[in-house]
Length: 146
Image (cartoon, rainbow, N blue to C red; front, side):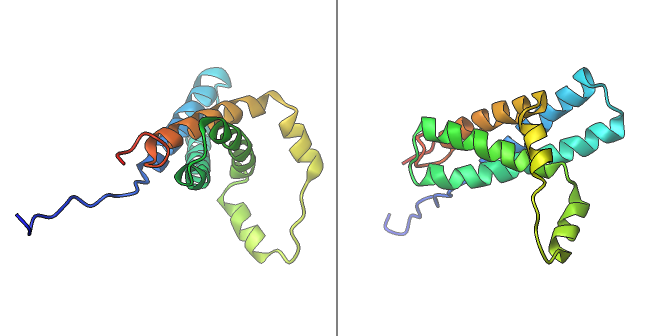
């Protein structure tokens, strides 16, 4: 009666795993079927894509919890997805270099080459899907119980 406990509402976070798996699956398809990379290169790229998907959904998820609409989520998903994805392929060793760096420099030519190449299309598409997926899965976004 009065001692019955209501189920604890959890804000989630499962969408991060889902987004990471979607990005890794998309990267697997590109590496294995389109570019036909070796198994090790494909697995490595999928790991980086999982991290990119996880990070993108975590960043976009904050805006979904604040109540951002679907259009804002799609645009943020594309911009953040491309930004995170372009840095994710630097690898884990780059994090150590960044940690030790006294001055952070941006290679604008490399960034421009990436943004103007066909390689930007998969992260842009996955970012768009991530924005919608995260909005659907967050309580304020419309998919969760209110």
